[in-house]
Image 1 (spheres, rainbow, N blue to C red):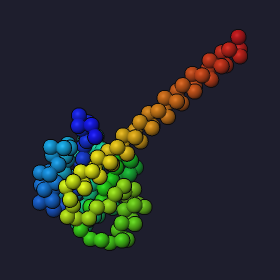
Image 2: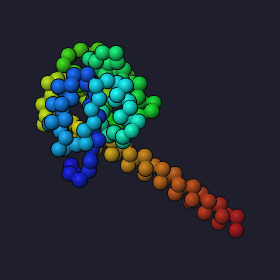
Image 3: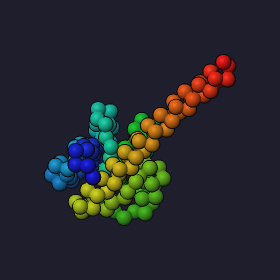
Amino acid sequence: MNSDTSINVLYVDDEVHNLNSFKAGFRRKFNVFTAESAVEGRAILEQQLIHVIITDQRMPVTTGIEFLESIIPAFPDPIRILLTGYADINAVIDAINKGQVYKYIQKPWMDEDLRINIEKAFEIYSLRKENRELTEALLVANKQLEFLLRQNLLS
């Protein structure tokens, strides 16, 4: 992992001590943004380029899955990780199907395990971005080639 690459991570959890613990454990490795609710999380997404979103499932008002599902149309690119203390298989299935979740991690997390998963998630983010850019460049090159071919056929 490139140490000069800044990874912007948003962690959404209604439990402040979890947010503080996450910040303490990861602020030296990543640019950490925290939110106590889905509303706060969305506000951060509107202000910052976020690469990886980690959210707790069990939150009042809006669950983690509902949050992730709600932001897909406006913010499809960040890679999503669902964090929960409950091994609810239906929540996991919903997370994968509705919230487009990359990983499901149980609380309490292990710092090293979570760090690796954040880095892998960022790799996926970067590869998807590069893929889109290469596809766009290819479309432009094809248009130029078609134009040149037409020019040669007409002359």
